[in-house]
Image 1: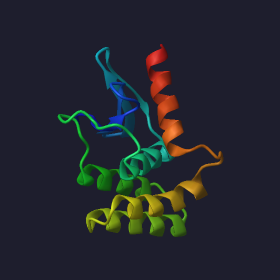
Image 2: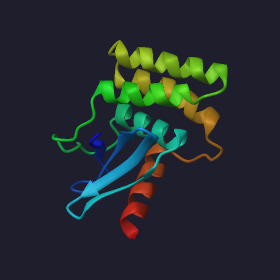
Image 3: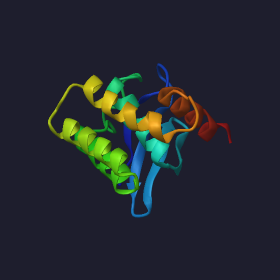
Length: 139
């Protein structure tokens, strides 16, 4: 699958997104130097979904822009890997909110509940993605 972008880390900066692969999802970032990627765990996938629905980034390139269906599939993937019933249920609510076309802030709030219960650190999802994007282009 070609990578879907959720936005740019800064004005005219690299875009940040994801790609589904048979083995799972990857975090992908791209700019005029090309694309870089790394495996994405549940926390990174949640951060991507939260940032998308919060509209936290500059506009994504139009030819790569992620859709609600892309994000719904991503959140379903996270839910499928979640062992805790209460978090699986919260993720199912988020998927329903996405599929029902609820406003982005309503979806982000549902995802934020899961984020708060799955991440050990107090990192902000957007800050995490910006840091990971910068790391991808350092090397």
